[in-house]
Length: 379
Image (cartoon, rainbow, N blue to C red):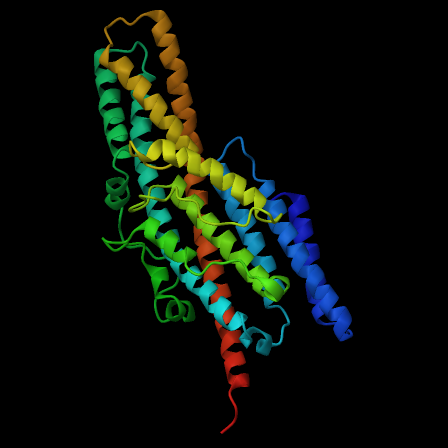
């Protein structure tokens, strides 16, 4: 993350840690609490407004998105959990809102699994593109090299038209962490398999995460209900963006907008990004697509152009046409390099997100359990 962002986060977390250990009057404590809540929301808005618009849904953009999500998650936990009396979290409306948020977290684990499978599928597309690049880099270019390139590109484009088949083709069991029997495994049995059920739907999972996600009203809007709502919205948006970019099982209807409060500052950057992504999704949904990842969109366009060249190829090809093809092959090669360098780190980042939210969920469960014991009258 940028140095300024990291510095702001460190300052914010340090401030909350110090404040929670200070002895203040009730009035002063309340005022500081409100200031912290406002600052958290401001940081969320700032982080999403700083996401670049020129490479939307590229590998680099997604990695930046996940960085910002981890920062938001750390600040959220500090605001709601750090040094707080557990009994505060057992009172309405948090006794209802926090379990709802933790349920969204569990659903997001399946999304992480599905996206990881989708990234494996993209690696397969990358390998097909690399075969075409090697063949078309040959000089002089002959019929044999062109046929080999066309075969690879035809397979690549066919896979792009069948996103579910592409994602399922790479389906296999994978461990995201330690073996079952550990505390993490007990808390989240979904964390140890990337194999998705046949009837699992990314679109339905996102819509399920939206269930009961409503902005707090009245007095609740100035209390801890607000950061819980903000974090729930951030979690859904990030998972929605990942599913839009990467091939996942059953994404029909994904482009439907989910409600975000346009009138508040923290949500406006997300609303703007959501509208841009949804517009791209509408363009692609009717004809089918392997995902909105920028590198794949470019690869698809180049693939179609190079197949047209292969269909009309006659040896020896015209010098002008060969020069044009050479540029396209180089661009395709550059995309393959970006994927080679970026897909694995992106998978590791998703794994980090996965483990972070599992740990945070466990921490909240421990505190809620303590709160439940405190609220239970002795026999």
